[in-house]
Image (cartoon, rainbow, N blue to C red; front, side, top):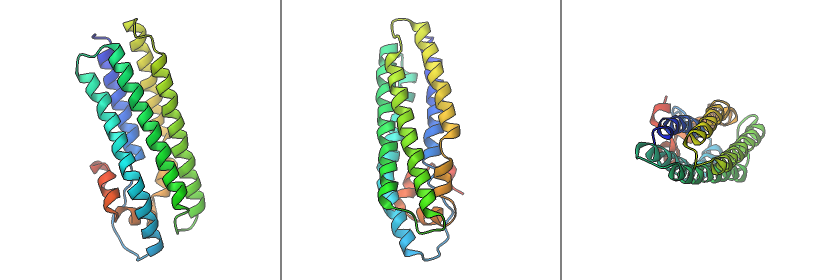
Length: 194
């Protein structure tokens, strides 16, 4: 069982990096009384919050599977379900941003389009990782561990490339409006506060 555990720990570490990025719904207070923008932020935050929880839960499931004495089959099953949940969550976030329409700021339409595109790309990427995990050979410990390593590498890339459009969407007034929403505050990783 030794071979899989350290690799799945790497997977969990890579995962948490990626998921935290996607939840960078921050902002540092400030109120310029833009009611339209506040309403937009509330709509997005309320829709995103349960998805953020789903991603965090999927992360936890993967990390938990590494700390126990898990068989490759258990790891495969847990990881596949977690990736599916993440894929669904990002897709739902994309739909929420799409449905909310462009935020009431300069370049709002471009920011919205880019964020939706990015969220859908993340959704597809996690769906692809799910397929890759399901295709791993659980009968051969070494091959399985190698396969997980490859997936961990892709996850790292996802975490690094993943959130530019989201960060762009959430800067300036949009970020301030989102920061005021209780549902965004609870979706935000504490370390991301500023």
